[in-house]
Length: 566
Image (spheres, rainbow, N blue to C red):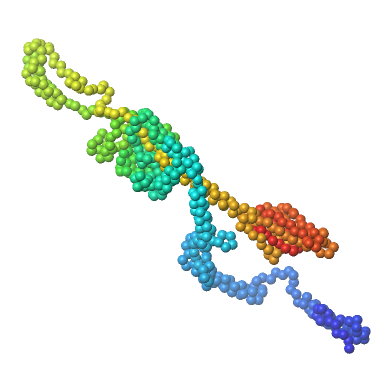
C-alpha cells in the first residue's frame, strides 16, 4: 500500500521515496489535475479583478450615496458624552481646582489633600510632614538640653547683658520667664513678667513710630530715635520707611489723567493749601491748591496719568524722592490739634506749623478841641485810660500839641522781648521714634540665644533634608531581572543617584569573550559605554552609578541578573 504523503499547502499528493513508481504515477496525476484546477481558479479571480485605475463617481456605485447619507445622519445624531454620564464617576459637585479621586468603587470630585498624595512608595505627604515636624521638635529639645552653662554664658556676654559677670542660671531664668512670644494682628509680642502683660516688640516705652518726646541730652537714647533740632531737617525714606508711612501714609484715591482733582482721599482733616502731594500720575512739585470736600482736594497741577495712590506731606516732602521732612520742633511749643477750629481758628483745623502772634490790643483817647489850648484827653476807650481835667501845656498857648506814647516795657516789672511772645520755657531737644525694634538688653539677649538655637535647628533641618538626598540613604537593592530588557533605555526619575549592577555568564568556548555593555546618557542620545566581560564559569558583573535624570541601558548580550540600588 502506497504511503500517502501530502503537501503542506492545499493538501496535494506528493511522491514518497517509500512508494513504487507505479504507485506514485497515479498520485502525481491527481496532484497535476489539482494544480490545474487551482491555476484556473486563479485566472478567473484575476479576470474578475477591478481595474487599478477607475473614475467612478459616488453616484455610479449602487447604494454608496445612501450609505454615506445614513452614516452622516447617524454621526450628527451622536451626543458628546459627559464625564458624569459614566456609571462609576460622580462629578456633580466639582469646582475649580478639584481632581478625580477613586473612593470605594467610584471616581469622585475632590480637592488634593496631603493625606492623599503619596511620598515615595508608602507614606503620604501628610505622614512625612508630621514626621518632619516631630523630628524638628525632638531636635530642638535635644539642642536646648545640650546647651551647657558656658555656651549660654558666652552668648549672654556677647550680647552685653548688664555690666557685671553673667551667671548661666540667670540667663536660663531670662529665657524661661521673658522669651514668650506670640503673633497678634500680624505683630509680634513678648510677655513681660514684670507687668504680667503682653507687649509689642518695640522700644521699652511702647511708643509707636512717629511719636515725638522731649529729650534732655544731645545724644539719642538708641538707634530707634533721632534728635530733631534743626528747621527743615529731613530723614531718609529708604532708611526709615515706617516713619514715612506714619507722617505721610499712602492713601487709596482716584487720580484721573488730565485732571487736577483727586477724589476718594478720605478725611481731609489736617490738609491745608500748599502741602506737597506725591503719587502715580502726579507731577513732581504738586501741592494742595484747595480742599474742596470731605474726601476731595484740587492739586496745583493736573495729573499726567491715571493713578490709585498718593501721599500728602503735612510737614514737607524733602527732595521729593529720597527724603522727607520732620516737623519743625525748633523753638516751638506743642499745641493740640483742633479739627473743629474752635480754639485755634487761625489754623482752620489743619496740621503743620503755626507762626507766633500777639492778639490785637486796641484803644483810643481824644479830647474835643476847645479854644486854642489843647487839653488832656477827656475820653478813653480800650487799652487807654487817664484823668479828666489834666491840662497838657499852658492854657491859651497857641500851637501846643498833645502826644500820647505807649510802650509795654515801661510798665513796672514788665518782661519784654523785641522778637517774640512766649511763656516761661524749659528748653529741651525733641526726639522722634523712627523705627520699631527691641532695645531692652535682657530681651535682646534672650532673643539672640533663641535665634542662635533657631539657626542651629534650621541648619540641622537643612542638613537632614540634604542627608535624605544622599546616595544610599533610604535606598535598597532590588532584583530587576524580570523587569528589565536589554537594548531598552530607562531613566532615573528619582532625586538622588542610583546604582545598576548587571551580571553575565559565558558558555563553552565563549567563557572569556562574552561581553556586554552598561551605558549611561544625560540626554538619551549620547551614551557612555562601560563594558563587562565574563570571567569563565563564574561569569562577570559590573556596576555603574546613574545620576538623577540620566538614562541607562544594557546592550551587547543577554544578562543573567540585573539589580538596582534605588
